[in-house]
Amino acid sequence: MQIVEVDGHDPVVFEKFFKVRDDVRRAEQEFPVGLGQEETRGLFTGNDPDERSNGLGLVDGDDWLGMVWLDWWLTENTHVVDVEIAVDPRFRRRGVASRLLDEVERRARADGRTLLTTSVIASAETGSSAGTAFAQARGFVPKHSELHQVIELPMDDAVVDALERVVPGYELVQWRDRTPDEWLGEFADAYTAMSRDVPHGDRSVELQVWTPERLVAREARRIEQRRFTHTTVAVDADGQLAAYTQMGGNVAVPERLYQYDTFVRPEHRGRGLGIAVKIPNLRSLQAELDHPAVLHTWNAPENAPMIAVNSKLGFRASDHRVLLELELG
Image (tube, rainbow, N blue to C red; front, side, top):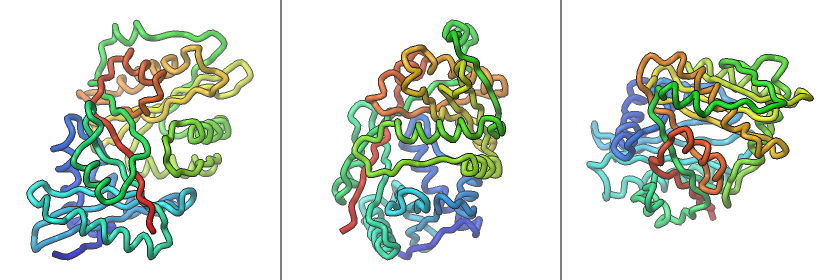
């Protein structure tokens, strides 16, 4: 068995690497999620100033036994490496995951990193799985969990109509893909507030500080990856961006759509703005659908108001994503 470096520049090697992960996801989840192959390869070959992605495979002859995807944070959280391990079911219980994790720990220490983080799919009922058991056996500590909810699209127009609401004193503004220049400052500030406000559990994370320049660069990279985004914001009488929501996906994986952030500033909560921005955004997304799709979203269990909004829309629980950390001694 040998460790193979994966940086995305060899499309044949990358296809084998990606297939292990994708096959495992499809086997473990009723509604699998994750980036498409070329979208992922774009992350590996790109020049993102915020993070660097690469991978390793454990290979025996022509067989890819397992893989690990690594995200190395470069702006905030520069002490962290995010790790995702997947092992072909045919080769489990042979030390494949342990061999890969040993190599990851060695490389992380050599790079001066002091913390490994990982997210593992777990049962919606029990919050545990073989993946969480392996991680904890290797010293990872659970720090947070998120409920994965799904809804199949398109939704019935009558259901959408019944949930639509107007909140007096707020104007809704919508855009696709790129934030209009006049909203860059407000939207970057809202992104920063979202980073501060979103439940983190006990995770060791640093606040992401967004600027208009950083937002423009992120959106440009997203477009290069053939990702699309629908955005709806609520603006108060003073012109402040009070709430926003984003949904989107990638043209290469049209059956997987994602509810990204939904955020309401604390001083504007309790007025129904969450669902007020979600419904028109959903309309915008569905207007371009010409095929069945599944819309995915994740929320911390303690974020009861947002889970309640999703339940009103018809989302149902699929599984949990458990986030764990390992301090490197």
